[in-house]
Length: 318
Image (cartoon, rainbow, N blue to C red; front, side, top):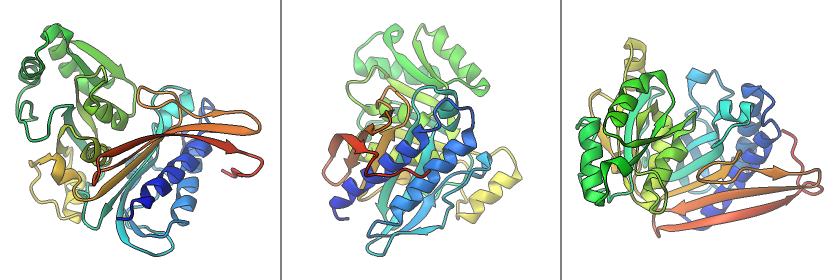
């Protein structure tokens, strides 16, 4: 893929973040999400690509989706697109932390066509070919083995977990070892990515979240390195039928990083609200400031971009 597409991706997430930021703290998730979706769709349709959305917004949210199978762009190279126009709709509505606009591109067939179900995920900043931790192991063993690998005490390990009732058993296991927990309210894409960054305080991410978000996080890890595994979880026959629609037949398969995202991958995220990975949008009547990260797997390049947007010239109608 043309390397200039990476910069075009930043414009896409910037526009979505600016649109969503107008609705921070106003209590309406759907309006915030709609604004981000409309802005992202407009930006994507201005790109010189022949894009197909393979990971879009989920049916769970009854959201104003950029739907799976939607075609975007003005024509050009064929690319698969994974996106979340507003990762953290509830966060944005409440004015919380870690909301982002996120998108990734891959060559045709580069992303797992994950159904809209839950995925068990584990990640860390170890090399992807080193089998130090695995979903196949129990959580306590993973923490002990990772601490040994990192040559630190188990008590000094920091495990990031989504604050959900379904994680109560995992939380109890972590605390029984004396390890520390960084609890997050939402936004596990940024949490998985943060766990793979070499200078972040998070040693490991573990939890159950959306499968589409797992693919997005894997796209970033293909660019920056790190370890990740994911396992799809099915609660009923309807969710198993969703898997069948995208030709997933092994319902117990544990997916490696390369099976979630592979080949030439580009990833961009722009902060909407302040978070551990990116500062949020700052605006006044005339200007807006955005903070983005853009990555490319082919070169391993990671760029941090600060954008200053003149609202007298750039009109936001979302």
